[in-house]
Image 1 (cartoon, rainbow, N blue to C red):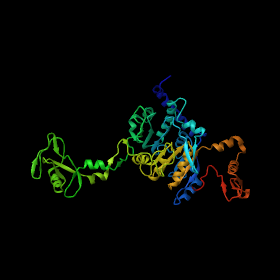
Image 2 (image 1 turned 120 degrees about the horizontal axis):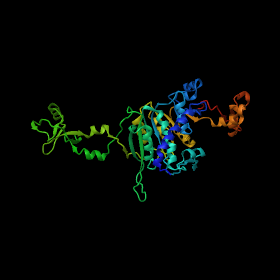
Image 3 (image 1 turned 60 degrees about the vertical axis):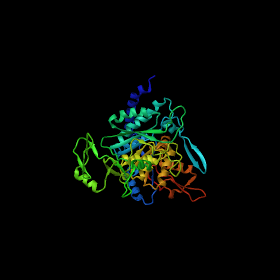
Length: 479
């Protein structure tokens, strides 16, 4: 039997072929496209009338190119549909964040609290087949799942785009090899180590407390905004260990020389030569100006240094590098949604601010608890989110409604229920037939035909509750 390393080339090659097959099917007459089930309008201030009017003139998925979307279904099909639809999202997404399951053998069922009781929502059969953390062929099967999705993600990326792949120690190194092949080794931007927890007492080894994010870019002309955080008080007190008597300002005595030879300069009227192999960093007139402004500090031996003030240094902050130790998952508060793999908003905020600008499209195809969509919305980005798990989509939908998001589309891939009815009834099928079944599931009696020509409205007996089972191709309702 071949080792996993020996299988990698064929896994990558087959993943590319699968991605091509999926795109080909999406572009054919037999495609399962994205169907809009709902226009979700959380904010009362939204211009929702124009969106509804637009939906009557063209397909709902094209109701407004600026509308974000939440997609329920297999992300492989979702990405293929986004590539094949018109207008296509090919080359339109500035930032993609992928947080696939880690092949960790963990049990990631959804835990829901209802009326004080905790309920475990197990993944349905389709979810278990597609994204379960255990496969019959182990890590090879995991890579077979991830690789075609990386190929499709590359097609969706804009020329100035970046993709972040969030992994842990189980498979990160294997996915990195595959990603090098898919995006190109020269497209690799950074390996980011994120400390996701505090102390971890793992028996017989160092505690595992970090995840890894691999960042790849489409081209060298990619969006990147440096990130700065405030300096710690301890760092500031240690570095700026001098106090200016006249003002009380803290400062650091920094060098005023640079490599290379140069002439002497006058300091306080005395000529001072620079150290061997060094030269003074400033011309004489600049040194005189620094003297007048009291910005030169002299040591006990008379050596001049440049004052670097703490209050000026603090303004910009400390630039973030590739080891992130300052973001821990939330333990209390409204941000916690009870989702086992939920990532902190601060983590996604750092990624989104670094690799996109307001108005850009941000995508997450394993959306989970909806953190990426929620943060992208708050930061003024458009977003695309997808997940095969119905609980994940419902949690994300509610989260966005609760934060008063702009209107967004809730979409499904294809129309499984309609296709099932059509295959059963054939030419006798009418969309109203399915609506009547849905009304019955809610215990509603259909309204009289003269009031209900589409057979899609009913009333629950003994109440004033009206049930509307609208067409799957229309955008209906307010959140």
